Image (cartoon, rainbow, N blue to C red; front, top):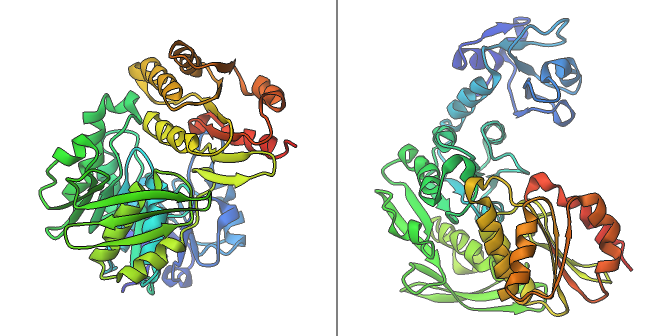
Length: 454
């Protein structure tokens, strides 16, 4: 493959190389947007943000080992070479797209309104049972994170799993233009970013923009329990998964083994075999099925697939369950939309103990917001939640609908300060406690408080 150098980056991005002649041919080995994360040989991408400007940290990046910077303006007293471009965001996407095309390996794209991070980790675990796998780390799933992820590909990688997150029209097309997935997974079309996308059909349209950037041998793996995805024709090979009988791959006989494992049988028209996954929640099989399908497509044996699933580690903040010694705590604080909240509530209701749901606002729901929060409140009552604790402006609708549907114990706090102060008096020993809200609510701040209860 052709290595990236500052000179090559300047050519790809139509930029100007500024620096010494020897620096033109230095190999770039990765990329970073934060100078504190720079490693030797990295390209440091200077990004202007709402709170700071990466250009101010360029020389710090050089001192940490950056081989080159990508900049939109002159770097005073630069301690290393840099490429001057009109837009660093546009340039890094151009460079990442070029770099990805140097690799002839299977690339799996993962998106969806619910569970895309957990699905990405399950796919990576399965693929990693046979191949040297590259994957999205952390939350690098947007128009800056995806190019940084692609630039972390190494010559020795044999497969790549890329998480692709969007909030508006056109974004998925730009991501897919870089990623060029061979296999594309959609976990669910749900109520996320409705303020931008309008309705579920808008979500479907935005998510499926990627199809136009797949080759003729591309494969779409879609949740067939989702009516929109089941009806959708991608114009290429389509494999459906879910719990319903009409799917190509199904999860059957699902059971929890204590709080440590979920077990089920994966079935298709040709075979069935049992799997176990070290995670809790009845939503896990739906997310594991795409991983099993990818394993089959890449030639893994049933034993290798099972081994990969056993190596899965739950992601912090996403249905991350622990026994604190006082309560069973489900930390699902990273994000929330109606479908993911209902899934989390269903898992909570199957645990022993008093079922306590601490729920906050679900953001980005636009004109549908109030009604969708009320639907979640009704679902809480139907799921048998024993105590509901709500926080945030919109969460008041959850409480109101819960009480209207017959829910008994309901508490509401307009802000987190009041909630945190009240928490010790609301939680009892032996409770099973779910914490869930949109990322902007920062409900992760509740987790240390709950872990310290005794």
